Image 1 (cartoon, rainbow, N blue to C red):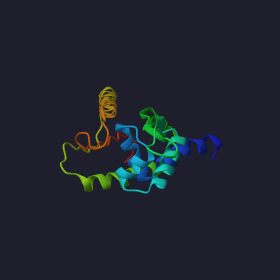
Image 2: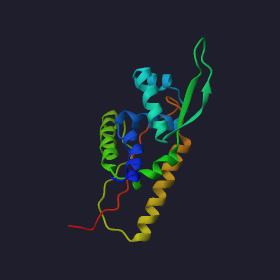
Image 3: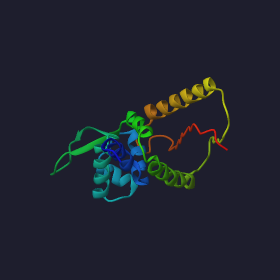
Image 4: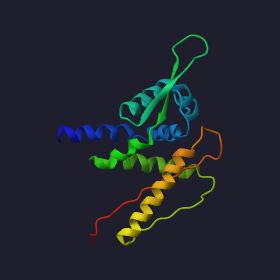
Length: 171
């Protein structure tokens, strides 16, 4: 494997963990510290801090500043998801790692479902312009979801999974 391909796998490996997918989803709505992430997900602070650092190193999270800590100690670093970071994933090898982690997390979310609003599955043939229009509409929906996401417990907890696949035309 070339050095360039190994470098492409760093973000994939950082995200190819169901817990990290949950962290990224959580940080879509609000900047949070390791303490807040740990409390929300019911994990140890050290674990949350480690995963946040790994996701930031891979470019999925941005530091948004520090929040003063009450009492002694260092200020808490806060992180927020960078939605543009996902663009490079489809250009790298080893997407199977990410797909497996996404499947695991999707199973968790399906088990947590209170009310299904819409779902759809299809394997069809479309004219190229129709396909491109659908991709554009889903991209708009994803951007709107990220733009309007709020902090935990501020509104309705929802899940959106969008995976548009262009398949090989083989029997």
